[in-house]
View 1 (tube, rainbow, N blue to C red):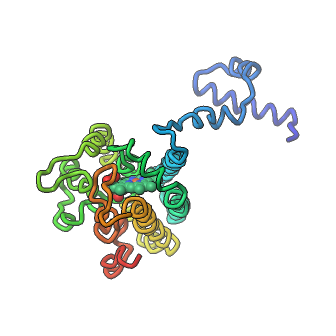
View 2 (tube, protein in one colour; view 1 turned 180 degrees about the horizontal axis):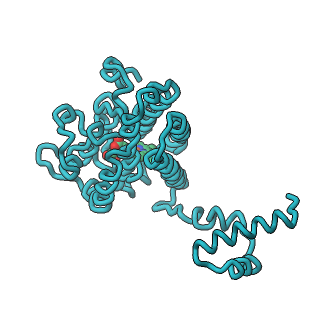
View 3 (tube, rainbow, N blue to C red; view 1 turned 120 degrees about the horizontal axis):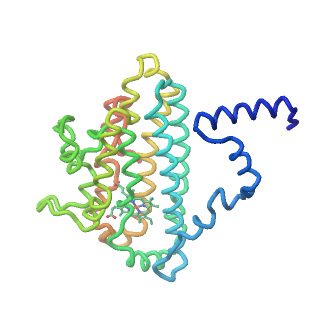
Length: 311
Ligand code: HEM
């Protein structure tokens, strides 16, 4: 870029304004430029840190596939949460901004759904069945970001266990509602109410963070923000389509890809093998039982009734 003296003066004036406002001395900042080293790709992307996070518990090579693919998922979950935050805290939210951010989120989730065959087909059965034994009682069930995506997408009522959802009072305090979330079913003996080790540890680590997040997103989650849009924006065809696509991708397509991977590895014989997290996973994972829907208003009664039935 050609930089004339006038351009340089204008840039200096802008910099001066910026550092004055911060109570900082511009000439000291400029001198810093003289001494700072140029940035490299590996510094900026933090490749050394990132590529040192893959630690196996066994010597089976396919365990590496399992670890890395989970890490990729967590990174994409972070990208999804980032976009949810952009919508949640947008002061003047337009249908266009909302739809564009949802399309980004859907692209990320489409990636996760389309790539799940890396789990289903990309590991040797014999290796998987051995290294998984060293992971128990850990489970993907303990992914906190997955839960935050759900909390950031919809009202808490829509995540209540299907058995209690209809009777659930939206005014119930967060503490009580958490006990009725659909995923408690994977970690609780409903006769005794006793929580599994997997669930207890998960709550010990994340429950307080979940409560803070739920309070913060009560009126700012995607569904809540949608409901406060003016009627014209609520009827925007692109936005409605983006919301339906996202809901369907997460709550049917991803859930089914995940279920099929579990079925492949854990349902070889007559009886399903126990999952590392210990859930009654066949019932727990299939979308037709829990009928998780982030944006119920955007689906007809028939579509809601048939959720997950024809997959
Ligand atoms: C071979 C691959 C996989 C198998 C066999 C598998 C199996 C399971 C099973 C059986 C459960 C039920 C809870 C339990 O008892 O453990 C579960 C839950 C879960 N897994 Fe996986 N999983 C696999 C890969 C993944 C990946 C790559 C992710 C991405 C982070 C993931 C994320 C989750 C999440 C978020 C849950 C909770 C889902 C919910 O509450 O509906 N899983 N998984």
